[in-house]
View 1 (tube, rainbow, N blue to C red):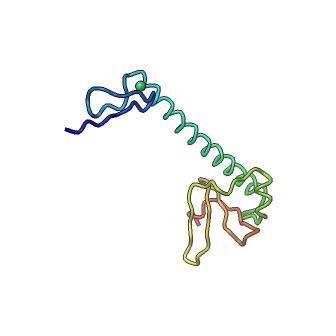
View 2: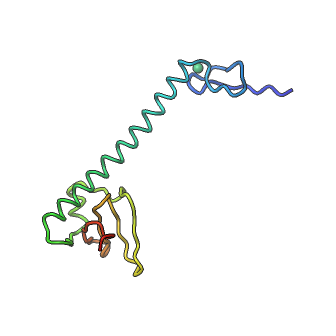
View 3: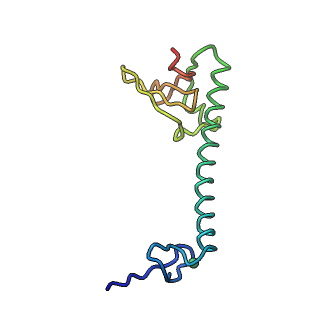
Length: 123
Ligand SMILES: [Zn+2]
């Protein structure tokens, strides 16, 4: 018979009893789950916050121009845009790439410039 020693995921103490137990008691399980849930929420909140910042910047630029607006990437960076965060990417049949934050996005013109636009799907 093989006796597998298991340890509580929260406090690290050895676990006795059922073989599927992962915690020594309810308080350890609750404490572990609360921390895990908080970490998940913090991560989601952080990403969502940046996505909203990005969208707001695109929206403002779009509203200030007439239709599509050509802007240098550095201008977006100066306004607080983070190019790592977007909701989805589109590549059209010509191979042109679009990055979106919800309904606003930009088309990559070259390494220094983008064309800010709104919801290309309606066109
Ligand atoms: Zn424990």
